[in-house]
Image (cartoon, rainbow over all chains, first blue to last red; front, side, top):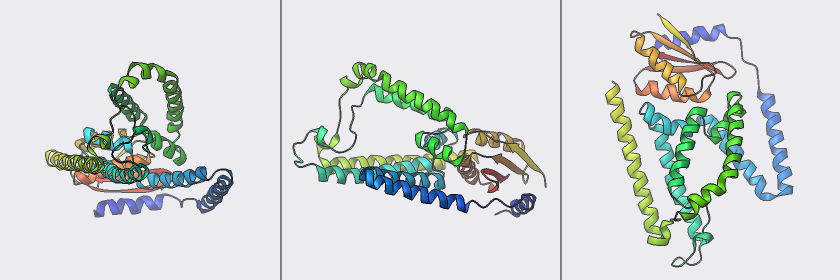
Length: 230
Length: 73
C-alpha cells in the first residue's frame, strides 16, 4: 500500500469522532429474528426454513457486496468480468445441485414428463429475450436487481425505497398483463428440457462444458481489456 | 501532495466509477483522488476497477454508511 494513502487515512481518522456503538441494536435484532423463527416453527415448518435461508442470503449479499447488476453491466462498461465469472461459477454449482435433486426425484429415467421434474422449467422463446432486455434496462437505471434493492433498503440507502415502489408496480402490471403475453407468445413456445432428449449425464456434462467455455472467454476478455487500457 | 475531492454522495452505481474515471484522466501522476460515497456497492465497483488499472487504492468508513475511497494515480 502506498505511503501517501496511509498518511491521508491517518490524518482523516483524527478528523472524525468515534463511531457510535451499534452492538446492542444488533443483539436486539438477533433476538427478534430468533423469535420470528420459533414463531414460524410452530406455524409452518417450511416458512421457518425460508426465513433462515433468506437471512443468510441477505447477510452474504451485504457482506460480499455482491451485485448482479454490476456483474452484467461492468463487463460491457469497463471490461471487468470478475463478478460475471462468479455468476458462471454459481451456475455451475447449481447445475450440479439441481441435476442431483431432479435425478433423485424422477422414478423412470427413460420415460418421464416435464411436469414431474422439480424446479421451474418454463417455455423458452421471444418472450425470454423481451423480458431479459426489459429487466436489464430496469436494473441498470435502478442501480440494483431485486435482491440488491432489498439488501440496500436494509442498509439504509433510501433511494432504493423508490425503486421498491417501482418494482411492486412493475410486478403487479406484469401479473395483470400476463394473459396477453401468455396467449401471444408463451403458450406457443416450446418447453425444452435437455435431459428428456439426450439423457441426464450428457446434458449435465454439456452444460458444464459450455459454462466453462464462457468462463474462459470472460477471463480472456478481462485480461485483453486490461492490456488495452494500460 | 495534491488531492482532488469528488462528491458522489447519493449517487448509485455506476456514476461514482464514471466520475472517478473522468477525474483521474485530468490528474497528474502522484496525485490522490478522494471519492466520497454512501453507496456500499460502488466501493467494490471502484476499488476493483482501480486495482485492475494498477492504481494504489484503499477505502475507509468515515461515518456510519459513508465511505471515502482513495485512489493514487
